[in-house]
Length: 122
Picture 1 (tube, helix red, strand yellow):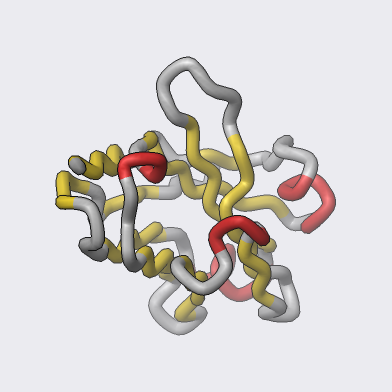
Picture 2: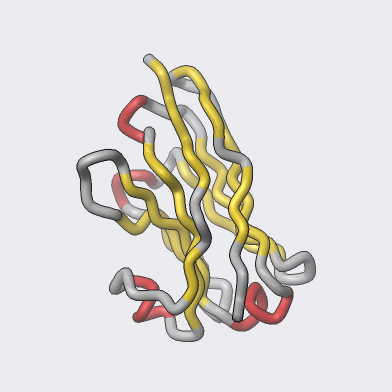
C-alpha cells in the first residue's frame, strides 16, 4: 500500500509563498503519475497540477505563472511551489498518485495523501 505524506502547508499573508512536499516511495515517484489537488471549504475538489510518468508537467491554466510542480525521482518527493498567494488559494491540498495519468486527471487516482492545509490571509 503506497503512502503519500504531504508537508509544507501553513498560514501566510497574501503575496507570500509556500512550497509543499509529498513524500512517496522512490518507485512511485519514478513510475507513477503524481499530482496535487485542492479543496476549499464548501467547494469542489480541483486539480492543481500533475507530473506524468514521463515527467511531463502540467499546471491548471488559472494557476500558471504562480504555481510550479516538480518531482525528485531519486528522493521520491513531489513538490508544489506556490508564489504570490491570495486568499482564494486557501484550501486543503492533497497529493495523489496513480499508474495511469488519465485516472489522476479524472480525479480518481488510486492513492491519496491526507492533505496539508494552506491558509492565506488578506
